[in-house]
Image (cartoon, rainbow over all chains, first blue to last red):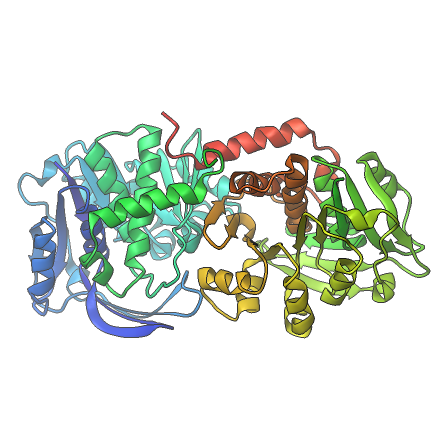
Length: 303
Length: 303
């Protein structure tokens, strides 16, 4: 049955020390679904404006992303403008234009209510809840959020989290959500809010995954050229969920491998602007980088 | 033959969000030698003033650290005063009093010139060179340095680095030394300066080790209580060198395990002020934490 993702499809304008692009393809659902499409079928629910061109949609269709749930509304597409300094871990948002996203209420097309793997990208937790009310009994519900919602819609977010299996957020968000500076303690507090699994993204430092009984640390794949970190988090989530949906397994070893596949996918995204690297990515490259991460972390089986 | 370390023995005054201590035992050679002493014999070369008490020396002797090379000079012992905020990765130095360290020129006691494992802690690269001129042919020479020397004594440092096998520095120092923001490229530039191995300390994010043909990523052991990061880097180096000296091996698998033992040692140091946690540490605890780091990073052998 593959994955259902609800998030944004957007135009991004991004400046990094290595270049500058305007109005390129972006959005959480775009990165997520492209990444996940390397592992399984994806259905996308989002909204774009009248100004959105056909080419990116053709690309998503070529990746076998089902766009039945992509609504085209009167008005302009969601736009984000950001800038990164040499510390590529932190984006500075210069401008956000919600546009058609402002009035967006996700409506699942017929048949989508049977979704088995559901990813609620970083949108208003009230919209995340609207989606949860339209699905039956997903095998796995994962979600993302951000400081804006943790601060501004805390109660709605807490309600959503009670129904979420896996929360995928960054370090700062984990500390903020738990109101606790120590990451390990913060993680425990977040797990007590509902999720069985907390995946903490740490940019170039990799990922920490927490469950009630275990912690897993995955490195980021070390890169010589990081062009643009935009979309890395959603690409990670796409690889993570994609691998889980493809294997249909939920034992700890599989979840850990899914984390590594997610990291590997993100390592490609940041090598170029927009989805340009993912557009020319081959599955064999994913497997090769997965093997290299194994070598990167191994300290027992080498000799 | 064990390890020879040249560095500081000092009084530290430290403030963290979790407490405050004045004039407690500190210094790079102190942390290093205590940590290494869990694995092998250590000989320490340093200087203290007339004000230095006997108790810490008795403690070091109880750890079988050879203090023949510890000079007591007229004047006061080296003192450092620092402060950490909730971001425990970065210390703010409030005061440095070199005192007897100002006139210090390391003189190796008779017999020390045969040292097989040599660690040059973070001191003036000209003093590091003076030590190198007094030893014969160590099996492994490792050294540390800091922004102050990278900026102020770059030429002397470059000279020292040509004779060093393993350089152990932090992320920012790596980027500064190479004048390159990307860590992987910076690492390559540093390796071209002489060291065969570069160990990059990243605080709570663990360690990256670079050689010409490989990269190894080791996580930091996730801690619920980090009290005081002072000495973590030197404790790491002590565990790293201690394990290497104990095994007398230098294949890649051994070096990687040494990195993990170093990280494990550092994870104990930060759990309390000064060397308090190391003072009550048992070797069985080290082994237990090493096993846990294995579980923490494993994504293949779990099932």
